[in-house]
Length: 458
Ligand SMILES: [Fe+2]
Image 1 (cartoon, helix red, strand yellow):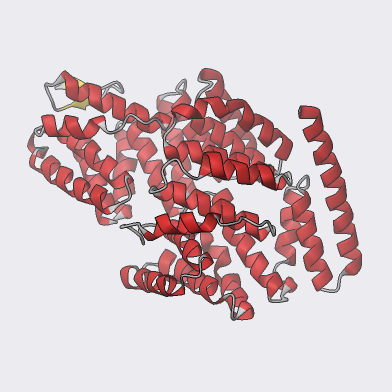
Image 2 (image 1 turned 180 degrees about the vertical axis):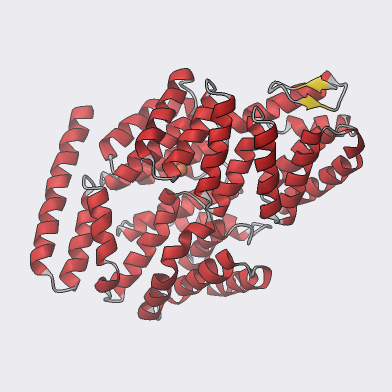
């Protein structure tokens, strides 16, 4: 029995296995790139259940058929080695096996138990938070974040985990304080850079967001493709709100699309940015084609509803109606649980029929948009679907559907000109000309203030 860097007992007598586990968990917590070492370590130490389980975790994160096969194989080996496992190793095995089977209730319950009994194991806590994130369970993320921080109050990873969980629970000031504390401890803590970006994004602090992210870009060079492209994506969102479409397109071409075109998260980020650009009337050229081609090559879809709606958009946007219809049929065949049946699939069908029946599509989107939390992802990511619903409602001449939401959005992010402009457009459509003029004036004032603040910063 040896001990890993987190103080966990590991059923092995091979120091090389411990070294591989440490490299793997460190990479996971810091969004690094040093993961693949775990496969060779698992092959070299078949009697160690922990290393088999960690190899299976990497397989599942690959988000493709090959990774799923690897996960099954390594979990089979872990199962055979469980006789010598510690209780913690058994719990992590059970959590991972449940994840592979899609039984997320068992998976998250095991991570909760691990957090209660082994709170110093922040690798397990981070993995549990990731599951809760994909399930749209903000309270669960926060509960696990608190456990991590209680066990390791001076750990930048734990502070970053807590910060993002607080942000998802709308506790913005506390989130920002925790994230900045993480960065004070470790200036390269990319997840904490990300948590601050979410706080500034939610508040509509565009100039501050651009400055914050630009200050930290150098640290992301050592990150994996998800964290690298996602943090650049957040910078892209700030630039979009600043009206700098050319800069956003340049980021898309150089930072956001192209790091790992086969990876689910990279694909979703690319779709999300192109979609948002077009919702603001910006021409994205031929960029959809390449994204859609890579999505078309995926051998694993219908894994997460949040991702599926992104994949579908790429198929629809490149006029691949046959593929889109088959894709939606695939969702229906494979899933019948509420996030899919009640939210994702109706919204997907509305996206599909929007061109020929905007009024019907707007009605459907309107009926499900309030339940979108269930499909997972962050508030900032899911806001894309709110934007689509708003756009669809306005195209269908149904401003009444979205005016209250648009007013709330503009007032929550008053420094963002686009929010006021969109509200003004809806008010005009609704015959509220005086209110529209007032909103247009607020948009103009916000644009002037933003221009001035960006000029000061450069
Ligand atoms: Fe994010």
